Length: 389
Ligand code: GCO
Ligand code: MN
Ligand code: MN
Image 1 (cartoon, helix red, strand yellow):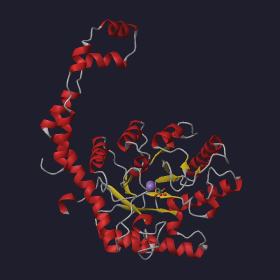
Image 2 (cartoon, rainbow, N blue to C red):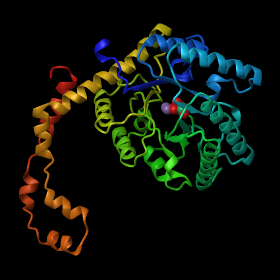
Image 3 (cartoon, helix red, strand yellow):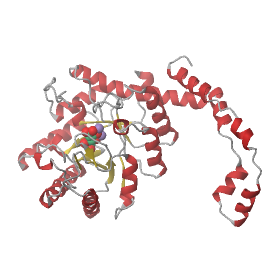
Image 4 (tube, helix red, strand yellow):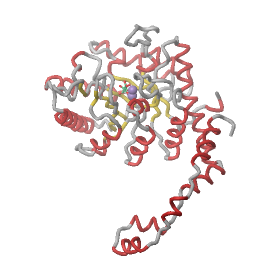
């Protein structure tokens, strides 16, 4: 393990709901006993290399807890965090579990449900702020529809926008310093969830009153469920300066929502993701939003948590090796032909640039006939990943 131990640059986090997942699925009940938040903190402390632990309001405080019960839970959990060297970088609201949210929270057609969702989120933000969280995630699991017969989807967007605008102001009013991270998912638990991909979220953010406060929380499995290239979505978020948080796990496309251990399903895509994050100096939380297989007891859950961390660190080392590999870099250079003069023409529009560009004689057949060594490059990448390079 020592060789692949996290450095202070890797802020690995887990959720109370992920390591505390009891293995319930639509076909069977729990296979592991429910741990208390204090027990989960202890478990994560014993894993090693874990930076923090995130929660939904009701992972920590039951929805119907009395103020006295809440105070005790908060006190005990703060002590458990300190005892195990953990912090809470991110908090979020459970806006999907209670039956009141069965047809949406912020996008519900019922104004009373929308108002309750706001009230619940303000309380959850208070709780997150009390633990020092600086990132606040919005995952709208129930914000969607099975049929569009009931609601105009543009109304849902308006309601969601109003809620976020209100909550941005609430954060500012209280000096919480939250950055909001919107998490897209195409489906599950709803048949269709609004704003289905990270790209949708990026477009939507620009329509908000405080876009600078709002970014995204992309999740590997969610773009994979949609059959999309996750790394490209993360790249767009990086390009827009909006990668505020990331949920790492794995998923076989076309299957149920699997939440596998990071790297468990598609090691190549995980490699390009880790490489992208490191090439661009991402230094936010690396949150494993994944569950241990249902076959596991809590020793297995620790194996799962260590596996997530270890795979990330191994892929990080592979990415550095890939970047330093002379043969690989030579092939990259062959594919990507640089020409400072031409690039300058693109970046500065002017009459001259147009004239120059129009006058250039390109050898189209020659450029078209040029072989690009992707086969070789990809095979070298595979050999590096397979451990013989
Ligand atoms: C899912 C989501 C959730 C969210 C969580 C934090 O598929 O259920 O990924 O795990 O990430 O609610 O907002
Ligand atoms: Mn998910
Ligand atoms: Mn998630």
